[in-house]
Length: 308
Image 1 (cartoon, rainbow, N blue to C red):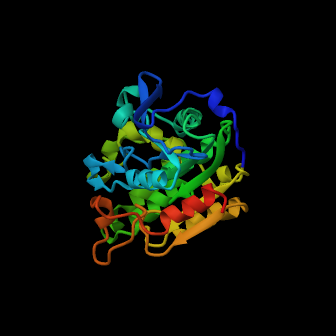
Image 2 (cartoon, one colour):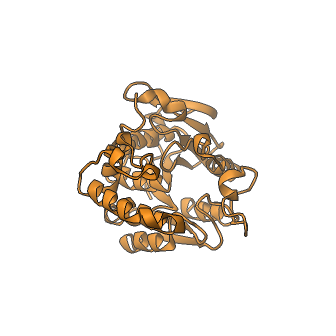
Image 3 (cartoon, one colour):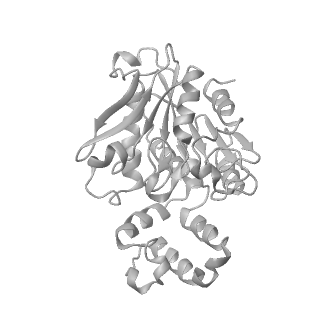
């Protein structure tokens, strides 16, 4: 683990709490800072896919978990600072680009490297905590690690190409059976670098594979997270819930095999939103911000970050 005692001499100090900004391509990128007095470590929390904001919510999709806010507050209580970011095109970073779909994983990773440098104003040792797709962004950012980067926390992160994961997720819903040949063909087209007129797809699939999304999906599907993970040799925690309906323990296994140095925390009964599953209410953790994080989440992160 690399600790840079003099790093704060060369990095701007981040506000103790509240929004902070760095320069984006066409406007500012924004994050929410939570400082901790005397913190030796800070965590940059990276959202998952789509219009998920710094708190872990996406009102347009009915997602209201507050998972990232709850994590940041728990870390602060334990003496760990944090920045939870809004991706370019969303939330407080909406003005950073004109079209939030006109992005690549490499662009997100470049933004993240600069957020790590900014977080060094909170603490000399910075960890990236990427959730879901944000874990892939963390892995790509770590291919050219910023000086202050100490380690990665991969929370419910795919270990397979995301196109394969999408096919698996859609196949798991019985009502999608008639659509699966078209889904599989569309994913194969995007994986091969091709595009398709959405109007040629069945109506239920047109929003998923909209013309404005296909460039981004093709870029995303080109990554094999496990292959990218092999190139990171620093500290890493793989955090995986046993009741996750989106990313499976198999994915955590692929990441762990690619990074023999990794710690792995398997959390039985924990959903994709890092909360305990409620029997009979499969989507409660996605829609009820009052539900707390699962008891094992924060201790696992603290053990990794503090080297215990």
